[in-house]
Image (cartoon, rainbow, N blue to C red; front, side, top):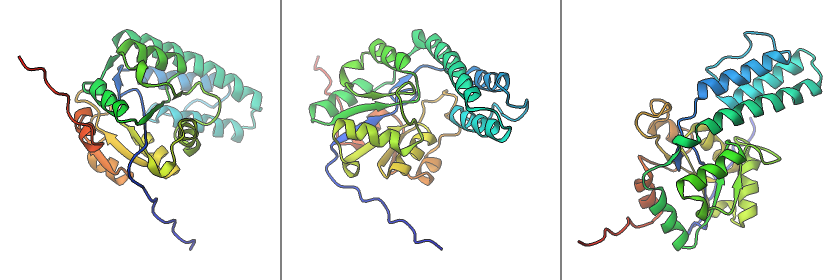
Length: 248
């Protein structure tokens, strides 16, 4: 039996915080059912046998399964590249439809203001497209906090690859043992765990599609060091004081 890897060693103080975007800092209510259906439709149009893919799978897993199916079926790599281009265009279009209804989560501005004031280096790691992510940050007034952003459109690995997070940390100059990744989904926990980076979860807001499945127990089992019910509680976890109310 191979030796067990030692637990990651986290150091204090934290120097940088990387955030997931959608569901964590902003809510856009993407139509994930349509997105998953678009991936499956593109895969089948490019040779994957019907019925091999299920809309119950998350998007990143559908793409992995489609690639595996294409290899198993002996399809050429060129077919996969055409599939990749087609599903990416479809997802990009569906994402942009959500932009008009995209809003910042309550507490996002005071949290980021406090982190920035304390000198934390901040970045975004998201599976959204570059176009949507930049537009969503501008729309919600959060763009000023983020000079660094890695998206689905960025060349190279994407979540849940550990390298996607490690590349962001390298870009902002933060050692992995002084870094924190914050997200609202198990894929975020998986990314941080693979990279051996501390992870804090933020529970989805009530009414969000993932609220029933992204629970405190699941996040703790997936390796979260802390779980916050909202961004105000997250601010307390990272030592950012609550905003001072103006006196009347």
